[in-house]
Image 1 (tube, rainbow, N blue to C red):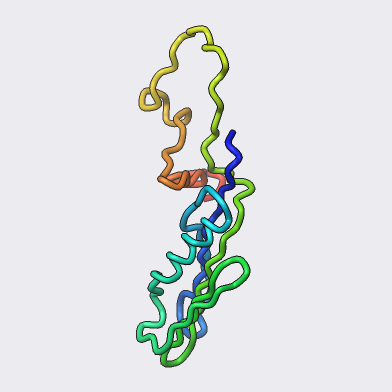
Image 2 (cartoon, rainbow, N blue to C red):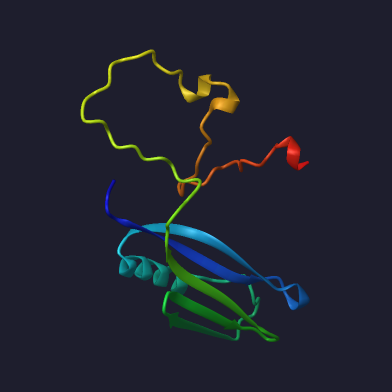
Length: 145
């Protein structure tokens, strides 16, 4: 395994309006490398970010914080905050398992059928470019209905 650090770029933003305002968070990307490299990418994203609210921005302020940036956009009636944070990824339950190649080739055994030929329950989940399952594992579970 390599010694590089993986950083998550987290964006928390105000959504909704009036009494229905709330904060939503998401990991928008992962950066492998140094914390400074991750902060540089985060700053690029923060500067380019165009929040959905307010619809008619009056003032926009981007502030640097210890772990990222704060974007405060004032509208006609209220302000909206977007927080950009860099955080070290310590664990990811949906991350693909990386196995290092063995020193010597293993003996040839009966070949496993390709994923498409296996029953649906045995297929590995389809992942997007960030390693997140395209279909959530809870979808279709009878115990959640």
